[in-house]
Amino acid sequence: MTRHTHIMKQEIQLFLEILYELQKIHSEFPIQYAICLGEIAQTPGISLTELSLRTGMPLSTTSRIISVLSQDKPNKKSYGYVVVKIVPNEKRKKQIFLSKSGENTIEKIRTTISAKN
Image (cartoon, rainbow, N blue to C red; front, top):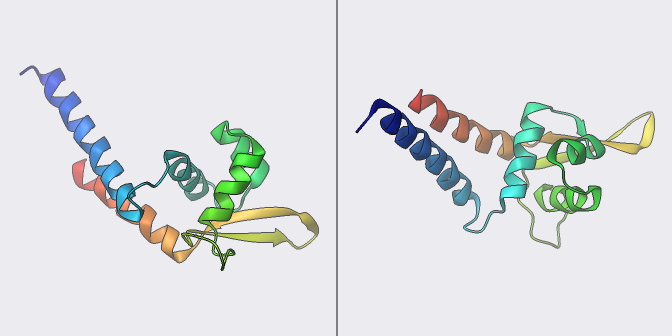
């Protein structure tokens, strides 16, 4: 096995470990949800519009994802990984942050990555 092949196998193994960590959230946790979680973790307080632009997903799709990831849906399936806050001076603008549960999930993923580096 060449050095390049060995490194590639290690990188793919790390990728799989990250996916398995995400799968622990829910066996069918969509990759779009994971992408949004990652973007929110990188930019706490990101707006819905900016999240949509960064992910390349339509605003309506991003909004639905945040609704599912949010704690604010008591009668529907929700993960409780994000908190949506209204900007005090701009009632129509919302900021998105990770909840404690979301932070814990991101930390588990970071730990998985750090253990391999």
